[in-house]
Image 1 (cartoon, rainbow, N blue to C red):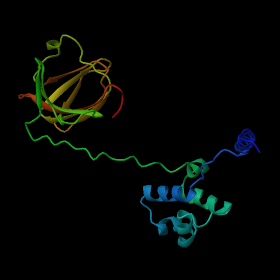
Image 2: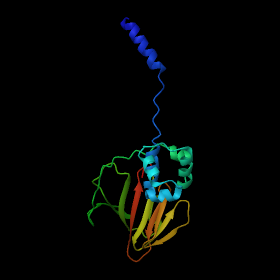
Image 3: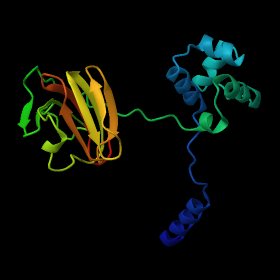
Image 4: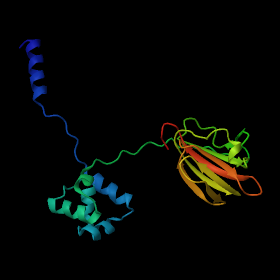
Length: 211
């Protein structure tokens, strides 16, 4: 048999093979659902009517569940069949990043209306931008235009009282401890209404929409 013939035969064999199909890994999926709900094997046993030993064998791929067992799992776990058959989630590898900012040691950026203190400045490519702001403005007329930026924003009043002006809503008064979440692409502006300048904490998502 020539080399050409050998290659042709090999190609025909390869072409005849069925495409690889990843196994369902049903046991891993059952365990993932159980742990996500902080259930013990006993909890799931009581919910499904399946013995703990049977559940353990299913989770460890020692046995394949029967149709009846699958139906009991679906009913007992409160899920549907597609959820049970979905592949287990791949755990993302954590980078273990952290960045401490001591009180008063943020990066300051004063403006005529606000005095910002950027927090956690040492981390690059953050998904969120946290900062503390002293609200110097006392009237909406101090702003020459709306403040707006891509993403979304969470704001909490740490000290004092403010009035939040937004492009599509009536002005809203917030006091110490109040918080609000809003679309920061919508025009907005803050003014202090308390005797002392108010202080707020804001956390903004980045402009690409991640959080």
